[in-house]
Amino acid sequence: MGRQTPLFGLHQELGARIVDFGGWDMPVQYGSQIGEHHAVRRAAGVFDVSHMCVIDLKGERTRAFLQQLLANDVAKLKTPGKALYSCLLNESGGILDDLIAYYLSDTFYRLVVNAGTRDKDLAWITQYAQAFGVTVSERADLAMLAVQGPDARAKAAQLLSGADAAAALALDVFVGRALGSWFVARTGYTGEDGFEIMMPAQDAVAAWRSLNSLGVASCGLGARDTLRLEAGMNLYGNDMDEATHPYESALAWTVALEPRGRAFIGRPALEAIIAAGSPRKLVGLLLEDRGVLRGHQKVLIAGVGEGEITSGTFSPTLERSIAFARVPVATGAAVQVDIRGKLLNARVVKPPFVRFGRSLIT
Amino acid sequence: MSNVPADLKYTKSHEWVRPLQDGTVEIGITDHAQHALGDLVFVEVPDVGRHLKAGEACAVVESVKAASDVYAPLAGEVTAGNPKLAGEPEVVNADAYGAGWLMRLRPAPGALEAAQLLSAAAYQEVLDAEGD
Image (cartoon, rainbow over all chains, first blue to last red):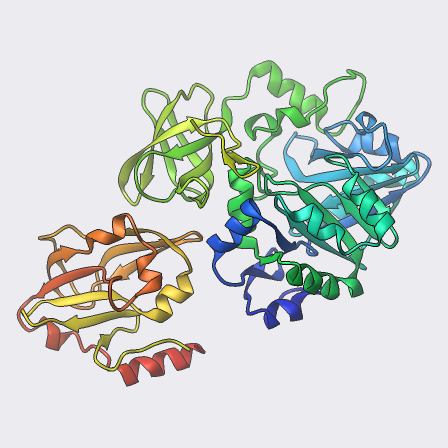
């Protein structure tokens, strides 16, 4: 048996199929995975993401610390509540994790990191925090619900009192704020609008039930995976890990090389990679033939070489198979994928595949 | 609780077999199997004329989450693949024992007897042992 979130009993009561995810017993689906996917694209769904790790960083030099720790630059965060997506790199430029950093005040930042990397991240962050006098606190007392979909914000706001609801609905994209004992952020991992809400663990079951009664569908990690793939968002451990760097993971946009003087961990290694040129890139694939692309299938590029699928699935929105693949940088528009010995045709496309309920594939 | 029709034969690997009037057999996956797989999005059935050995991987059923092999319950020659499944794989979820059949086989001589297929009661015991 793995670790359980405060919502585990409710998941069982709702008939969820439970699977191990990074050492956690998590719901993969409640009924139809495709039904849950469509609920998020067309209306609203709620996910238990309490297994993710919330880390609070406090101290006078927290910003300077994060400017050393992260590949993206928290100096971009000018207004309290604003969030930033970043990689956490090792000295070789390999990706230890991807995370969200919230700027709450000059002496208080909050990180949200992946469940499966929690122990590694905490050890890494704590080790570097000492020199800056920054305190590192894991917020295991919090549950986190992701409410996602075109109707998600309006539904979730009904859980809040009038003034707090108005404040939540006024949040800009990628901004969060504390509302009472809850922290509500307009973020997500689905390609839809919505909130991610951190709350005291004891509030989670009642909040979930209220959302269900408002018509928000319970959604599992299965739908979360198809939604994030359609939305062109990487999954740590599948699409990137310590053996890969941001420039071969479609994450160059998250590395802040300016200002040039900012000495973040992994910077010298990344500069060497840029100077030499990354031999590989991460691209989106759309399967032209019938079948389903899956992680680790071999990609063949005529006259260029070979690559590998990092994540693949059936896209419920497009009703075709889509994937991310790491391929040689010279790869053009057409590739083939080896599926059980058959070579099927796939087209290289630029993710996202789907955003706000609509296909971006032409 | 899975549906296990009494008039069919079964395998431990969750295929069902229905003897037809013309001496061929119809093969599919059980209700338990379709439920465990979840929403099917792709089904690959064998080509007509292919000779299958008992236990040979002969079809693939893929849900959103994963691909699974289907094994030939008995030896024989494929006489039909269900043409409906190319466009509507979800039919297997909706009607595993009917419209969601996968293939028809002409059994090799003695293959039906040699296959030692399970009765509905024996298959139910397999499910019970798996905790279904």
